[in-house]
Length: 373
Ligand SMILES: Cc1cc2nc3c(=O)[nH]c(=O)nc-3n(C[C@H](O)[C@H](O)[C@H](O)COP(=O)(O)OP(=O)(O)OC[C@H]3O[C@@H](n4cnc5c(N)ncnc54)[C@H](O)[C@@H]3O)c2cc1C
Image 1 (cartoon, rainbow, N blue to C red):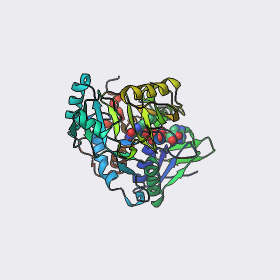
Image 2 (image 1 turned 135 degrees about the horizontal axis):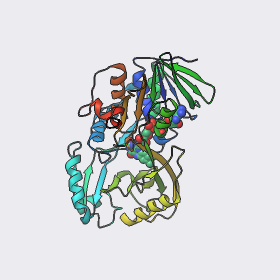
Image 3 (image 1 turned 90 degrees about the vertical axis):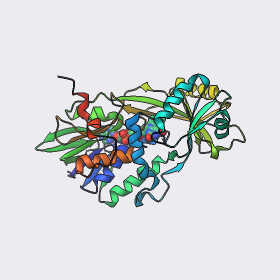
Image 4 (image 1 turned 60 degrees about the horizontal axis):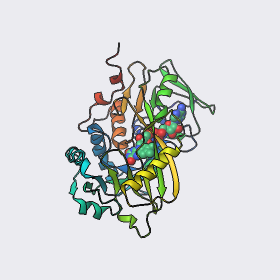
């Protein structure tokens, strides 16, 4: 029986970033069901850090995460964990009001440039001529999720922590003040604290432990890659997003990628792209840009898992000693991971709270049950 101080369930970005900081204070083991880390949501994202995602609280978590990405700890330095990429939010005339409102909101977090039609097309020549308005943040970051996951893993291991892959947790019981966990591969573990970072499966894991689920909703999102028109200067292109949630695209390994920003409810699963959303991505790309999507090079889908209020949940379950929730990172789990890890460190290890404009109460899992008898 392995008996660390803290067991973290889930080897995605949430689990690994939390484990890395917790290993400063305690013996930590991470259990991951798959043979590799980041197999699910963390390895399938659009990998962008930008402020058009989520709402005020998500933006505050993103802002608080920036110093980490700009100056990562030593164990992250092998490979850059991100590179600068401008973010362009563009709008047609009929979307102008929406763009103005977004600019007012985002300018509290990022330094934005307002662009007219010429400025929009200079930054992104692929857009159709009706993209008349834009806001640009030249300071966006295209993250490298692999480097981020591996950096966290190196931090964990450097402090004596362990990752056990191929260990799908199947039973979770509280006995004599500790959680006893068994895995499908025959592993047995016990720890006083269990961190539930099981991504889309976090509610399932809670139920198996006799803990009330939060009502998490996994939603599928699709990405396609395809060739850019010959002669396109891919290096200078931004991450370009419609002001409404219709389409984003960006350069990707010598090609372009695009998402129709679909949010299709799903069970927790190994998400696969659906033909309808693949076709929608190509359709919206051709509707908003001058690019012809002749041949789709690759496609994938992943789950973005939301709590009922679309804010992440971090904190101990009120009804179950030592059961810590770290779930509901939605579509912003990579870019907020350093701040969320710092929050986990405060709530479990008692370190100072360092995240401005975010309170523990705003993230507490108990908030979903406060109104219920
Ligand atoms: C298409 C798409 C685009 C996105 N774009 C962005 C973006 O631009 N910027 C951004 O910041 N975020 C983005 N996201 C969101 C981001 O990817 C997620 O918020 C983040 O990856 C969630 O991390 P996680 O660790 O909670 O989940 P996961 O990476 O899914 O990790 C959870 C892990 O738990 C494991 N697990 C589950 N149950 C068990 C069990 N019983 N036993 C052991 N292990 C278990 C799973 O195998 C899995 O590896 C995007 C997501 C998608 C799908």
